[in-house]
Image (cartoon, rainbow, N blue to C red):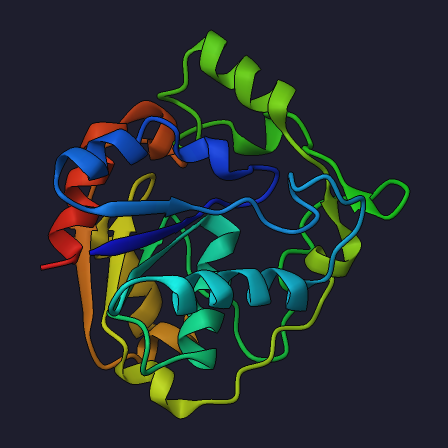
Length: 226
């Protein structure tokens, strides 16, 4: 199966470099995306342009692909399901949940000159970053790409109720499947509360398993294709 890989804020397609060969070894075709304004060489981009890039990857894939969203990009993966519910095989959400209708995409940190730079590691102390060694955390920070305001502050809109029929696999890194279920059942994640098919899988990692547990993450994603 084709697997479209969409990393979260500040990351480009190279974030999946260690996951891609693992997926290929398991018989899948990995498609890591570098999003507009987030590593493609352009200074600015909009959320709509990023959604269009994910949709284009879906449309060019063979068959019905698995679309993987990491962190904030869980919303991008879910927006792809909203735009092309009949083309997706499933959605995998790694370390995050889709934003709700009418919310800002990812207005989490201050912006400078119209872009949101990586804020350093202080906001991610604890379970998010506990499994990152010094070399890995330094490499991530050095490679981090400021994200345009046209992405982070954009309002999320959905249109197609059929997105709720797309199967979802929630990959739970710094939180447990039990916590994820509790958040969804309590109404904190309205989009997932309405999803018809949600499976939960655990991975013993922090927020960035593509760097710390690439082989295990690949196995979980491959299993989501079956």
